[in-house]
Amino acid sequence: MPALFEFESVVVRRGGRPVLNGVDLVIPDLGPTVVVGPSGSGKTTLLRLCNRLDVPTSGSIRFKGRPLDSFDVLSLRHQIGMVFQRPTPFPGTVGDNLRVAVDDIDRSGMVELLRRAELEGSFLDRDVSGLSGGEAQRMCLARTLAVEPSVVLMDEPTASLDEAPKRQLERLASRLVESGVMVLWVTHELAQAQRLGGHVVVVLEGRVAGTGTVDEIVGREGPASIFLSGGLDAG
Amino acid sequence: MPGDVTPIEVAAALLLVVVTVALSAWQRLGLGSSVAWASIRALLQLLAIGSGLVFVVRPDSPIALSWLWVMAMVGFAAETTARRVPEFPAIRWLALTSFAAAGVVTLGIIFGLGIFPVEGRTVVPLAGMMIGNAMTATILVARRLVAEFGDKRSEVEARLALGQSSRQAARPYLREALRTALIPQIETTKAVGIVFLPGAMTGLILAGVDPIDAVLVQVVVMYLVLGAAATTTVIIALGVRRHVFTPDHRLVPLQPDVERANRSS
Image (tube, rainbow over all chains, first blue to last red):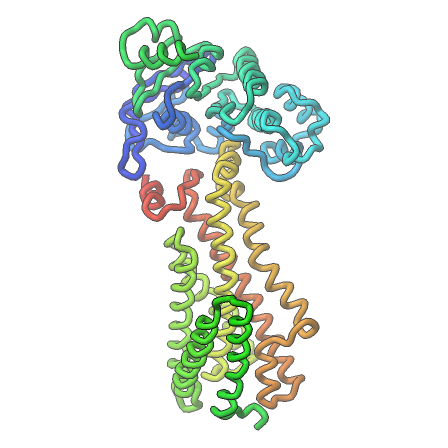
């Protein structure tokens, strides 16, 4: 299986406290990868290391076989986009937001981006302050796609959304994967991990406790299996 | 001279403080003792400063004494700024740098072009006006930026995640903070003379100077204040930006200890 990201003995400390404590991990270059774990387990930090919004205290990370820190960080972030936990609209219209990503983008290009995020072209002139949570988050996805990334990091993007917009964003992620854009999705919701399918990484207390499909992990003994089984039963 | 005020007359003016205290008591504002203390303290502070200034601005005093006085004012202003922006300890040095730079630029122009002669009686008051006003603008810009980079952290990071450099990502917040700090100065400059008579001019007129001469002095002071506010706020804004981002375009938390730790990683 070709590797998208490879983590080797990655440690992140913050204020002397370990957030990630020796992570060894291979994230495959196919399908969605869902990083799942309870709140505070270090999964968001793991994601933020991928586009260098955070850096490891020690250890190394490779992206497509090349050390992450050997990339120019700005061009790396064009390749690896990110959608945050809460929508992060910039002041102005939806069009203004897309132009922050690509300043010379034309109207048809923007309409196409909105279409990929299941938003109508009429949204372009709407002020972001009038968008619902789901619309704002999809606008953020469209904005991320404007720089044509090959990977999209999604940091619990449905945490603040109701059920319907949540499912819509999950569907959009699956469609991205079908179109060849790799998706790394962080969630603490086990049912969501199962719905998204693909490769699952279980993070517990700053360590990778298990990787594989949900069924594979549940089939093995250990804390990852217990975590997934407990959550899936509850779900 | 018309400007001469005797100690007895100052004591008479204290009646105004009594009026204020009485109003506070009548409206049960609970500010009576604060007003009394502030008024007495201001009187004592200014008397002390005035006694010191007598030596500094005397024609036969060495000019170095005046510059020493200015340096002390710069230090005090930096300390005050640091106290008002406790979330960002680096502000102390930034403020010190910005006041010093503003001093070099503005006083350099005023004295370099011979607008005023370099004497104790010009150096100290002009520097005082410059530093006092610049400090207000500096605190405004620093507080605003600290709030922006704290409250809008994910918005700033979203810009970085789009591949923007830290300079680009910070631009909208810097622009807003600078506008917030400078617009009051600009508005004051516009309204001067119509809405209110500024301090330096009022003081000169009270002291018996011809109003036109007082206006000319005031105009120079206003331009000095404007130039100083612009210089200091821009230096502070760029300095804050430099401190909150790492060279590899990450936003570091605005917390005293963590900040240094992250920058070194």
